[in-house]
Length: 416
Image (cartoon, rainbow, N blue to C red; front, side, top):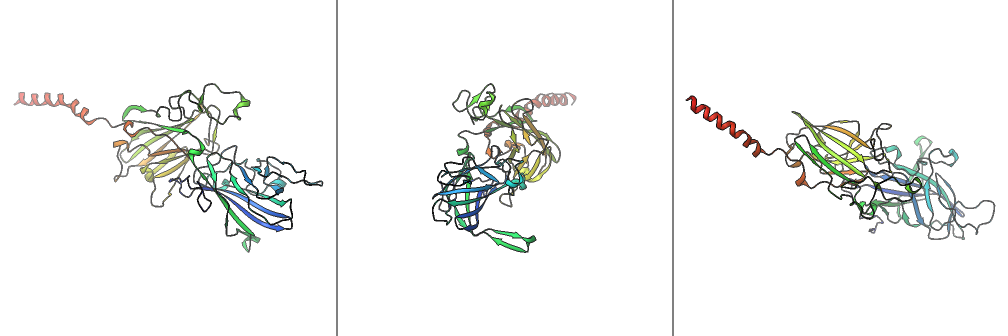
């Protein structure tokens, strides 16, 4: 659904209420027959990133526009340019061009600032230096009208995202000469794209299992959390041939009760006088895919008293300012920032130490377990609360001491 401001309204995320991907179009120069534009893609999301194969931007021209040249990106198809004569043909004559980022290591004369990351965009929290992509292009028309008209029907080319129409905003300003002079674009438009998990995948992509030091029960992921064995759209078994791995986007997962590509296990490990410790283990059941620059988002009321995190990066997500119950975890660069495919090395783990807040802390009623966990921005299936590992039954403990009380009473009566 798209509202009247051109913004998709069905992808609201309460853990990141202002998160979106904004595509900014700046008209820098308009001369006879040619319009020079700079297009910037901003990932204004706290924790959701664009992973390989990256964005693949698409739109539809309203007239007979063509792209004469590009820097920092390229069109996947040149199209039919037979209408043009001469030694130099346009870069793309497609009515609906598909634009992709250039790869790292591209020649410098083809680069622009913030380009050439293979379409990958980091989140703002995880790596603020890599959440923007930029390219430039010269656009002209095959007719006599040189006035630039914004295209329509935008598509980011990333599963789960839907984009609204272009909205004209205040022209962008640029600094030059060390900040002593400012220039501005002739015109600027914003296109806003929102994420919806239901659009990205018809089934969940991860699940959560639980355990605690005070209970021998291990609560597994709910059965069929992400699909059932043999269900259409769920694949399991042997690794497919290499040539077929990039042709079918359906995750191929190791056979399990939950059939999820990712499982997150939360273990209440230990209780101290003033602190308590939890362990998180992330396991990859996808036998074809490594997850680079992965992240976890955890919602737990005691994160406001988090003291130490071992082997993971951590940043609080104070989405509403006064509430500090949500945090983001991700790997350390060149150490554990890649979750390898299913196998003996396909898991990562960390431990967190939290201070007991006397006003809210308890192990009763499953309070020590997270309220919500997300992996790479997708919410994981939690077990039902009535199945959480519970504290030992006090009634059983009391009944176990009854024989001792009776014997002690008889002994006192005998002595008297």
